[in-house]
Length: 162
Image (tube, rainbow, N blue to C red; front, side, top):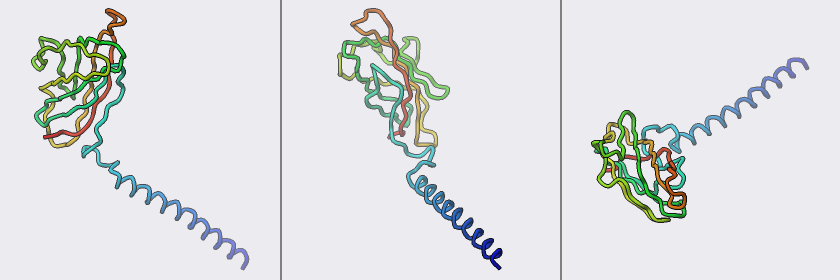
């Protein structure tokens, strides 16, 4: 009789231990789902990653494929932007005068802690999802180092806007 009681108690302890673990896993999954972790392609918090020196401060991606971007100079000296490139999927726009989507006057100087706005068109327009992600590279000269070309690059993501 003692042997059956010990086996029953062991079975009950086993079920209770794994039952609580299962309940905790379910609660965590529900919380993560409610926070929107599984809503890929839905509304996301705009952000950027990987930049140094000349950085994106603010940006808007319009549904027609126009990216408006504000660059801030965090170098501490005047910088001259000599080239930039935005790519999204198979579309790419550069500051090269031969590029059809290049803006006019894409070589400019930014003073320390100042902002310069740029606009690039011809990127991927709104097609179903609300989320976008672009790669952005900017090449610039620091006035303290003369002709040394420096690069700042990274990813920018957010939501399409009207």
